[in-house]
Structures are given as structure tokens and as C-alpha cells.
Image (cartoon, rainbow, N blue to C red):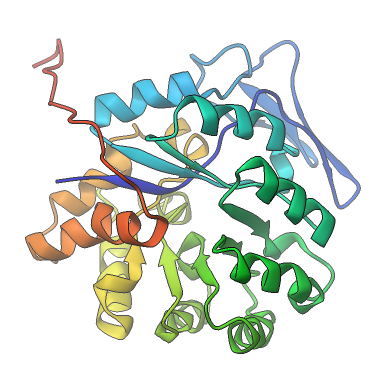
Length: 295
């Protein structure tokens, strides 16, 4: 089974300000960050230099037999355009890297550099998403993909509907599985009824972290969403590396593999087939299973 991660993150160092509050890698323990108002374990404790690099991620991907990954961006990590441009050039078969932009000039520049997508952490915006319509029209005209996370209160749904109306050929991936543990999450899922809108599950194990592996409520939610819009509209995402402070990278998807709620065809679509078509991945590496020392 080909596996593609539709929601991951990379950074060299966190140094950002969100709503006037800092997010910074800590000097004394670089696997941790000061996050807005408190210290958080941002990376697994063995990643001690604070660098969330492509090489470490590739090691995790190879171990978990994940062929490729989409790298999105979040304001809390700071702008990683320079690093992700480098990674896209270095590992073009393994990564689809999203740029971060807020204006037409920035999108044009990123497109010129070869970025094929833009990530907008919409849940952290104060202004309407429709303010970016000129930018989205440019993306539509140039075949770029929009990765979009929405606020859990769903006040942005009408804005997304307007974007879809005005940019009907723009490919949009809705993140965080519609903030599945919050009221009204299915309204975000239903956006996938539009032909060019998909939903990815990045962060679903974080949202169900209190329940923990094997995340039976997450399985139930994926089944419910598939029954609503079709499994062909859903993609797996891990939200690496934040989620692997609690579980291993393989655990972030093998609860789906081991579930009896899905057919083999549905698992293949959700875990990789849909993302391959949506993002246009080419040939993926063959990653054989390597036996653990503990086996």
C-alpha cells in the first residue's frame, strides 16, 4: 500500500509571534518551546537541537514506509519559505512543500521559485479569507493548491464557499479534519462536496489524544465523514512532528490499517491514493518493512 502524509511540518528553528505572544525554541532544552504563555514539549525529547529537519523526517518516513509527504506551514513555527524551497529542490520525489504568503506579490514570488502550493493557517487570521481572493485567483490560474485550516467555530465557512464560487478550479485541502472534536465539525467536512475540495486528517490523533491509541473515536469520525462525502474526498495526515511527542509516526496511521471499519480499497484511498491524485505525486520509493530489534 502506498502511503502519503498530507499534513506535516518542517522547520529549522521556531521564532515567531502570534497574536502578540512569542513561540520560540528554548535554549536549555531545544526539544521544547515557549508556546504563547507556557513551556511545551514541541518535539520528541531525543530531537535535542530544536531542528525539525527533512532528514530526520525522512528517517521516520522510511521506517514507517511512508513514501511522500505534504509539508504545510503554521504561523507558530515562523515563516519557513527559504528552508522549504531548499528541501523541495533536494527531495522533489518525497515532498510537496507549501509556501506561506499573504499578498499577491508574495504568491507571485513563491510561484516563480517553484512552489506549487500555499498554506494558510486560517484559524489564526483576524481578517476575512475573502480579502485574499486576488491571491487565490492567481493560484487557480497557475494550478497551485491551497492548504487551509479553519477556525473551530465555523465562522469562515461562508468565506470558503465564496472562494469556491469565485475560484471553482482552485484545489483546496481543508486541514485538521474539520476540527473533528468540536461541535459542528461536519460542516467543514461537507465543504468536500465541492469537486476541487478535499479534507485531510492532520492532527486527528492530537484531537483525540485523551482517548489515545488506537483512537476508536477517530476511526468512527473518519467512517462518518466517508459516509457523508465519500472516502475518495478524504486524505490521511499526521501533523508531524507535534503528534509524535505522544505516539510513534507509524502509530499515527496504523490504527487505520488495523481497523475493521474500512475496506482495503478505502484504506488505500485514504492513506495514499487520494493524495497521490490530488497533489500529483510521481513515482514513490519502494520501502520494505525492516524488522525491529524488539521483534
